[in-house]
Length: 304
Image 1 (cartoon, one colour):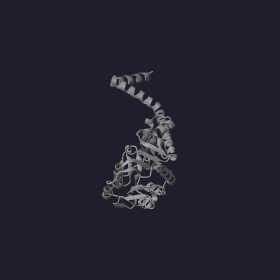
Image 2 (cartoon, rainbow, N blue to C red; image 1 turned 180 degrees about the horizontal axis):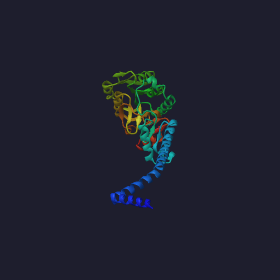
Image 3 (cartoon, rainbow, N blue to C red; image 1 turned 180 degrees about the vertical axis):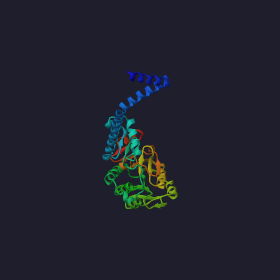
Image 4 (cartoon, rainbow, N blue to C red; image 1 turned 90 degrees about the vertical axis):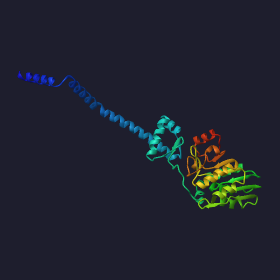
């Protein structure tokens, strides 16, 4: 019978030692601790599940880029059934981790920036696509015209196909193009002169630009290293880029000859924004959304 009395005395003493506020705080803390103990494991499991879903979606994005050179945000959004905002966040995260490269409206696993190569190396790349491009470009070359052929492998291949045309005058900074055109007795050749770049076997600099200023031509057939909706047209060499810009100023129409591997790419030397050109001839592997955007900006796109 003495035990209950001792127990009652203990709780009375504790009650007087602690005020009501402390008792309330201890009670709330105890309840909170119980709730956390019960629900924390479930919250951790839920978070893990969400992370798993996110990783699976990102894996599907990377899987899509294994078979495609480029994929757009809208296509990923439709395919994965999530918003474009979610896709953009995924692409930003994947780019930060080094899995891909963001482009205008999409992503690619290929490097965005291009580096200088020799003409001989370039001529071994995308040969079939270039052949179709120059075949189409011939439709836009008429007799009695004054045209400019830029430097590069595509322009060199085009020069090889000019036989049969009469009273054509060709201006070019490329030594290879000039030598090729000279084989045609019906074509007048004007080389711009200047400092010769060994990689491209073409001339750049003040002498080439001053020679160019003496002429006005109908059409420029321009080979490039990269074409990007934001950055514009570019070359790997600043001198060539500047000369290309001057050539655009000396013609009535600029036709860009570029296979689809040049799309969404950037070179070191800026030539001009895409709005400065009149037409792009490229192969049918070109990104459809890129093509649509160019056409919205008033640029004619020919797919071959």
